[in-house]
Amino acid sequence: MLELRNISKIFPGVKALDDVTLSFQTGEIHALMGENGAGKSTLIKIITGIYQADLGGIYLDGQQVEMKSYRDAVEHDISMVSQEIQIIPEASVAENIVLDRLDKYSRHGHVDWKMVRQEAAKYLEMVGLDISTDARTELLTAAQKQLIQIAKALSANAKYILLDEPTSSLTSYESGNLIRLVKKLKEEGVGIIFVSHKIEEVLELCDVVSVIRDGKYVGTRECQGLKRAEIVKMMIGREEANEHLGFLDVGDETVLEVKHAVAYGKTEDVSLALKKGEILGLYGLIGSGRTELARLIFGADKMDSGEIYVNGARAEIHSIRDAIEKYRIGYVSENRKEEGLILDFPVGTNISINIWHRILNRFRKIQTDKEKEIVDGMVQKMQIKTPSVQTHAQNLSGGNQQKVSIGKWLAADCDILIIDEPTVGVDVGAKKYIHDLIWKLAKEEGKSILLISSDMPEMVTLARRILVFKDHRIAGEICGLNQEEKSYEEVSQEIGRLMA
Image (cartoon, rainbow, N blue to C red; front, side, top):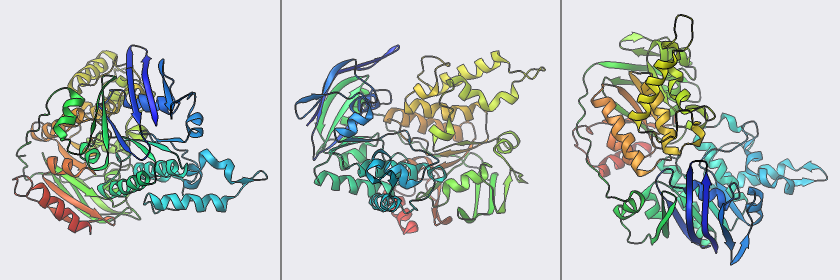
């Protein structure tokens, strides 16, 4: 048994954990839930020695243990997959997987690379990732990097594995593979501490769920027979509002058109049209071409052939700057940690960075009063919880980081928004807020949105037309969502057929 007794942790200006007592068993999948900023990530960082508690202790099988570093956790058979992607970009996939145990593959001062590759390949297969063990990790997608982190945790053969939002970057297919793997680990006697905001996933997978709210322990419940509404009430202290979003008035005006886009190894002859005020969904597995297409439109990657039209005119997008300044296209990246935000910069800088060129005075200096007005307005509009606009983005919770990531494009007043995985790693309250925000951008402000999501309920809720990607192409189109002509089950089955 792994026990936490009376754990408290104080950061400057905030009590992150307040007298939390919890226990976890081997051979059990134990969910840990709560809103962003509730203290979940702080708690698992204390378990793994990344943080040290100010009060309280950690006990393994009744004996108190000191966790002064992550190395201590590893030595006590505890492993973690962090919500933040933590890899060495310049290293190979194999090197990242065996990093904590590289000395075990060394003989007489030399690493047995053949053995390293064989070991890494075994765990890549376990997580369902079909890539070379020699691939450089910096060239991989966020989802692939997440799976590599999971493979690394598995390779440690730990008694307890802490998974912090492990499926946040994964499609339903990859998530399904991971869930089967976690169940297998449970059967082998491993204790799984599973941090997730996906309530349905928790109810399907976990044995028990514990909830933390505002740094305090709320309670633990058996998952069998537990209702979603009960978990939500424990998390937010009230009933969940769940009204239908309604009809989206999409006109005939085409604002973005892609014709026969080809980028070798990424997209093959992809064409689509986005209408003014429309939310067009792009759904598919990781690597199917949806994010790859978004990056071509945004100028982050180059097309080998094809054309892009904005408001009926041929667009020459040779860079991200062209997309933003010439065509008012914004892109909320799926990977907010590495691409969406500058984590060690203030919240205010992250919000205003895309509009600096618009608020320069005649001496080519930023007008700080205008910048402050825009930043303060966006913090209020997005309901970003931050001590100050000078607080570094890395110190915010995941949900508030995502609000900043979206807010910087709203500040830029883009007409076309590409939003990739808008609610990755955010809680039920923030998720509802972001859904309502995306809906209002289209319905009330006439923004045109390309929505990429691996969350099928999210896709069906927001998108009024869905393009399904498979093998770098569009496999088919699903219409009839705007008029509520199809149920969620019907749409799910149709997507499944197109992806088969």
